[in-house]
Amino acid sequence: MTELFGVERTPQAEDELERLFEFLVEWSETWEELDQAQHVLHQLRTGIKKRLAENPRAYRKAGDGRRTTRRELIAGLGSTGHVALCEILPGREVKVLAVRHQREEDYH
Image (cartoon, rainbow, N blue to C red; front, side, top):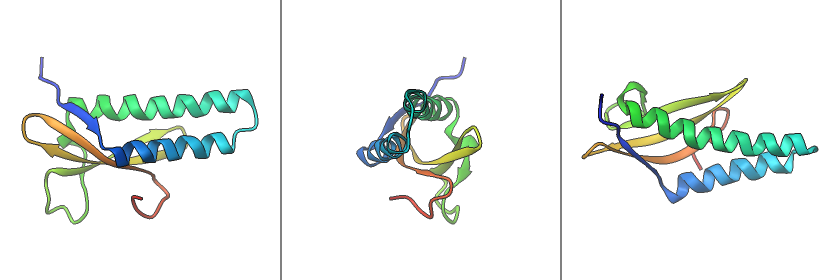
């Protein structure tokens, strides 16, 4: 079995996930939509971590591609998706630097 990478989120990435959750809660009109907001947040956190732990080099190079350790993972959820910017570090570690909705212009 292949050794997994350790994955951590920066405070900025965590703030962006919380911002997404607050946005979803703000637009929720029913208890079911509130539950869905919690589900989306959970799916993003666990899905990004699981996929990066398995093979962070499988995802596209970020920016101009010259920095081979910086990658973007697209995490789709239904008809929308989010992009996680990450940095592959020495020692089989990955740091999630930022998370944004796929339709946002740039990371916050």
